[in-house]
Image (tube, rainbow, N blue to C red; front, side, top):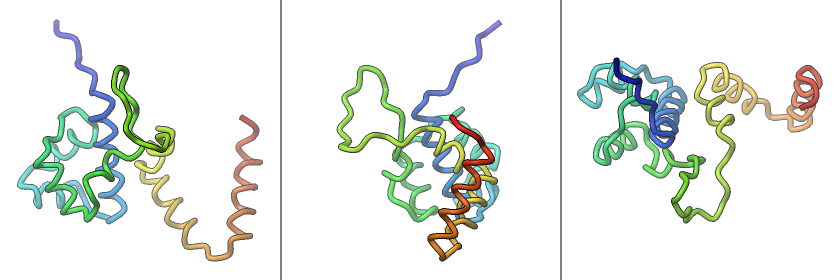
Length: 134
């Protein structure tokens, strides 16, 4: 029996960023797959990090999703043994994971449509009270 291979954390992160951006554009996996000449199942594998996205394919995805290639690496986990050349610390993975969900994306989009900054702050305070202390 073969052991199941665990996706590389960078591949998983890049895939989740592809998913997040695709969802931001309200694009289906099927539509992205069609634009890439792939099946939606292949797009699913990319988004889960099961399959690694090659450089030319990532460039193609960045064009379709209208973001620079660097977008997919923002907040990527630092790999042990690699020297990070980025000046800013990566954002916590839970933020990217949350934004990659449909609930997270919907909540963020709706929240950003609230123009009144005091009301936004009150909503944050309310949610923090409901959630309790860390």
